[in-house]
Length: 366
Image 1 (cartoon, rainbow, N blue to C red):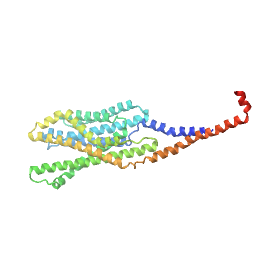
Image 2 (image 1 turned 90 degrees about the vertical axis):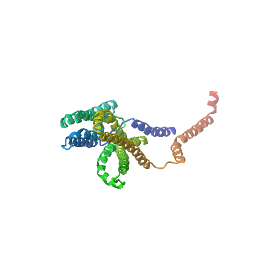
Image 3 (image 1 turned 180 degrees about the vertical axis):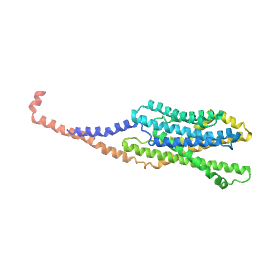
Image 4 (image 1 turned 60 degrees about the vertical axis):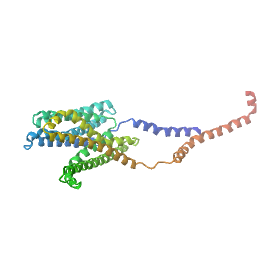
């Protein structure tokens, strides 16, 4: 009788561990994916419209090729983020309808990216001038959207949502930061000499990358924190994401910028070559801009990862001492330990009393 409570307490203590293990294998959808998709698609449309206005303006003239090359990085980055955001939203719909089907979710993410790329390519071909540069922009944009959709097919959807949120915020920040470049040039000592202009441009670029990385890390950490709270409200046994998820989310915008540069240099190689062949100044400008984009991506990657990791570290509580877990374990295991001696103690007197009460039966048994 005394052993039964010990067994019940052990079974009850083992039950949460089984539920926690089961919940770790269950994927969690990315919250707010529909809003992210709308914002990312709106940003892509804005980039396509601004590029079209720059190329088709009367002042462009024969410099349309050069302007197309300058505008291509913004369009490709926006298409990459839009494809990933749309794929996340579509993946949430598939999750609600069909449940935990990883293969279907990945195929649906690629399909959503293809849809975004197809719509963007058709819009470019219908609204831009019919030139060779138009086909390059359309094809490269479609490829970027498909790659973004494939990235969103990852199993850890909240981490991908954090990357998309931080990347979108970083892209918007870069455009908004352009209004502060002229005052910063004066602040960093830009003068009449060529060397002073080059030095000021380097400091302006580093300031932009540093602030962009800080913003990316904070946005990634904020999104993951919000996603964690929503998941706990739905399922209290949802496991918390560990530090690698925060590190990847903070570094994600920089990785997307570097991936966009790879897509530009592969898919848009012909456009970049045409722009560089216009003049020696254009060739120097294209080389300088490419190097600046790579440096910006690296800065955003490391600063964003460090910011998100530090922010996550500040949420951790103080480490427990060695005595506290041991004391808790001993307190929890005392009932099961004491139940066995008590049972033995109860059974031993019963056996002794039985043997003392009827010695004749004991002799007969012998």
